Image 1 (cartoon, rainbow, N blue to C red):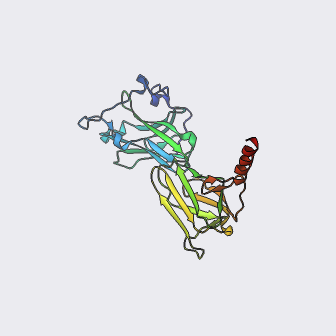
Image 2: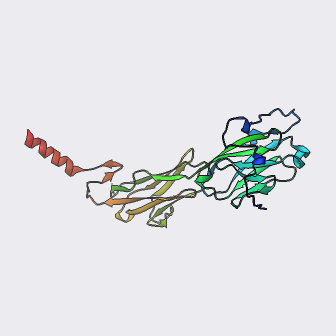
Image 3: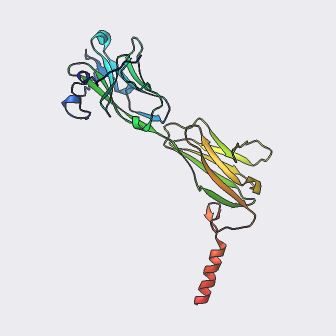
Length: 272
């Protein structure tokens, strides 16, 4: 349910100024469950790292609220513009990407954000309307994973060598569900009749995928694309050579420029 609010409900914000410090944002740290009043369970109300465009949830767990939900309200406020987003189970913004989620008898008050963008990054305040009001701050960081292929944009190798391509997915809070490798816009089959094609994927803080193509042939030349499920694809052009050595050629990742070396040798002989 969405409700229009023509103002930012300053009475709910108690004169909030958007700054972290000061009396206007007095943060209640009542973590002792023996207290009779409400308090935040910070272990269930953590900062969030979200993928660009993928629905995310900011959670705020309020303990000991009990039957006081009739008199006390839990709200979400966006600090960027001091905008009141939700009160209780109701949403107070025209931006339909935001939605309040709360189940009956639950201690969790959740802010859902669909299709998060970079501009949504920042501080969000979970607020309980006690006197003075209680606040817990959750930081949202919206990131976009990046794909890199080492050696791009071009790789030159000799015929009969092994094509060894390394694709790295960076800045991803979780590994991609899958990584497709493509050759000239066609998905590579690792059990094709060509043979000698394999892939190894290592997952961690960053995910790395290695594509190996043994006994390279001229027909193996072309565009190779690493296409992970959670990031933009990246391509590299592979040139399989028959003994030709362009100046910019790389062999096994190392520059190979025999003509340049020959010229330097001749110059040294002339000078001495």
